[in-house]
Length: 267
Image (cartoon, rainbow, N blue to C red; front, side, top):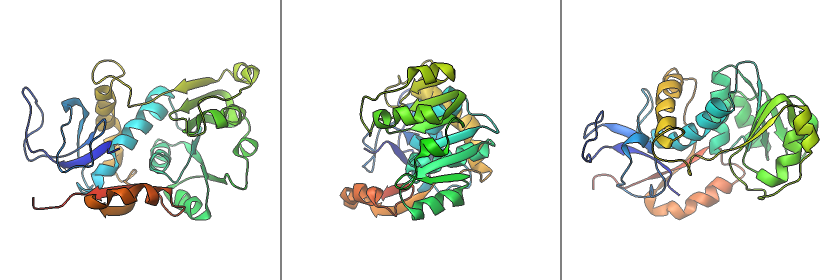
């Protein structure tokens, strides 16, 4: 918990360059963000994008790093391609919609309520599928170029059905189980790829590292944020002392995007 933060630099470690005490920053961390102070590896620090309040910037680093590294850097989503993200109303989903639209892709999402469906449409989703009423694999059979999936095993077979020729399925979590059955013949016939990725288990520095991803986000995604094409999506703000209420809010059918925890001020 507490994988992304924002605030003001209070102190610097030895040899840190490019940032000063007092700078407003946000950061991707491995945990421990439910606090007033935390230590951040220098390579995982990001400037707050111009036009974004420093408090709201806390909703960006983890989702930006996850979406940019998986959908853009690894899966190579391109302008004009069809992109499907499951859980379109969540933190990853709402960010992924905006990133894909910003580069000119078409976007399909799965959601579980009409409220979330409308919010996804407002963010730019072209195709919205209520998974309680529709089968996304039947609706999108053989059409999708890139899928961003957090369900894992339970969605594996249907995700492959939805992929088109040359499609890329990126699995970032296993909320639907660690194992699943798949038609390998369909995968081969479509010349499709299944990619397992996670930002958390990457090294701090070097090729494919968190530092490399954060640098790419700062160089390539932050300009899109500063142009107003991508923005934090915030469902609620809570005092840090009420952090235990956060998970219940995120699981609510009316929650879209992130829940921010605000530490006490003036201390």
